Length: 540
Image (cartoon, rainbow, N blue to C red; front, side, top):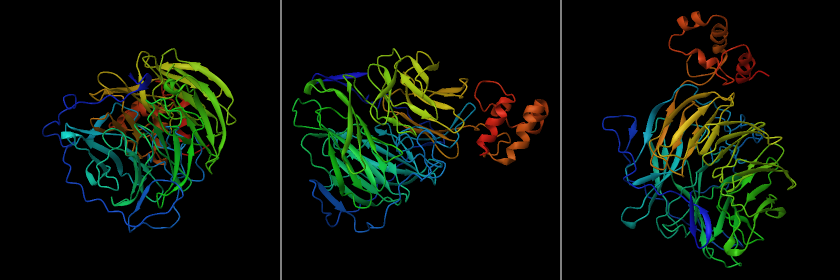
């Protein structure tokens, strides 16, 4: 959907009314509705110095030890992160390259809800991040009576509340954020940007794993504005994009990216766009450490959209004019630092790390609202009421379309190559498809909204957010032929039995389903799945 504001076409958030929110089911222990009063936030003490304008506040307990980045040295865009965060979903789309792909496994059979976190009908629940220890972090907001009550909530893996912290700026003003929290390698959490009711008075803040505020940073820019710009981790820094009120035609107002020190929140640098364009979302980071930002055209300023490659020191390396299309989602970066972006005309394009367009694919949909997901050489793109387009990432050739006629939004891909996506429809339908194109399952969340999310936890649970609630769904994962919850060498014997003697397999493992041996996801169990099964176990 689009909103016309000040002559500029914008992708808008659908505000979920209390009347649309589902009521908790009485007596259902899986529905968690109790939120204790938030603890008092740690007050800032001291001031960090910087040549850049802004307000900084540090909590007394802030430590100056070097911060570890949240992805391991062996991480490769598009290939998951088996060395560092395979056990979590620590930021938007899983990793700094925004691939949406994880080394964990998702559910292969019809899912069931394990629990639902739904504070109350008047509170909205946004996008989750998952730490390697299984802790789930999510922001919430209530705007009852015109008062902003924004919180960062930590949940145990079973969905119960671990702690929560009120989101405030340095003046004590309540702020809120729809952005996915970011978790670093030390377990610290970052929120950027939190803002007031009208999306101004921006604040970035960091909280430690116990819920105490470590630091805050407030840029204090003229007409600063943030809606769904999502932050991402870099080496020792947090990259956070900010816009400067795109509804105005003032050419002096430019969007920018801050690199904030993870320990202190002090800006290491601020890069300002050389063009009067608009940043609808945040950046992504390539394997080489360069930052990639896609912008939207801005008719109010006569500006085209651009793709930028920024060096880790904050200097612009190159920019490419990508025309009048509105880019509403961040780019996706592969292992060669090639870039994939989709636009509001329904066209997805691939650019080289030098800024040359390599191919384009028209979904004939009219809009791509969420970023694609990259799993090796396969790119999946959600197109408006045109299904999920599966493309060869090298050539841009269309392989197939999943769920034709649907409007896929948030996506996630697992180690087996299965793809899970939330559809923008009246009931918020979620699908799970095998890599071979076979639909494994589907269900309705009960609420359709443009602000939605999907994340895969290490235990195979699928976390789905629809602004009204966050629900964890579970089912056995592919390859778990003994149904003990793990895919390991203990599954080899039952796997081989399922191929050789399906009847005997069913007798020996009556609690399991033989379809878990369909690793390829093509709807059949045969010898072609065997090599894929051993790849799940780590054999090459």
